[in-house]
Amino acid sequence: MADLLWDDVKCFFDPDLMGPLPDVRVPDASAEDWQEVLDLVAEREWQCQYSEDETPLPVPRAEAVLSRSANAGYPSLRVWPTADVLAIFRFYADDEIDFDVDLRELQGQGQLDVFCGFLREIGRRLGKPVLMDPQGRCGHPVLGFDVGADRVVLLAEPGQVTAGDG
Image 1: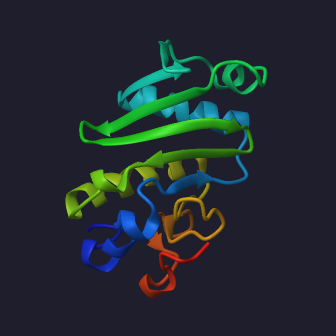
Image 2: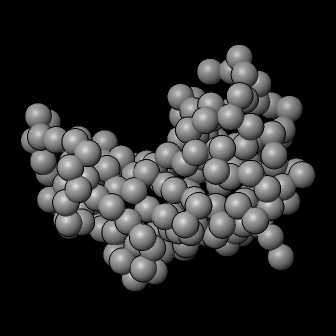
């Protein structure tokens, strides 16, 4: 059975309401958690591409990326859990894992199931919640992986989020 049903959550996948790139995050993370995510990507054999300032490079250890100097190139890791769903991880800080997804790619029950499965894999691996906030409105999650429930759950009612929030 699906974690979430498309008809119940489609408003949270509306780019006009949420912004096209909502913020997905794992709060209270560590460099070790980042490495667990990198290991998960490798183990699941998800297609990925690491780059610094758009220059493709081999995927480094998390510690190496997170300890880079402030003036070093901008690092990102693109991960495709399926060919048509992309998550872009940003290495802003070691205490929060954050990534973007494009809501225009997440339309319909099938894509929602892929997305929920991706959040579930990360949440289970880390034993931590994985939260999705509207773009630019961090701290107001609308859905996420709940560790206790072991599934992705709604964290807001559809009417609670409007384009003017934030």
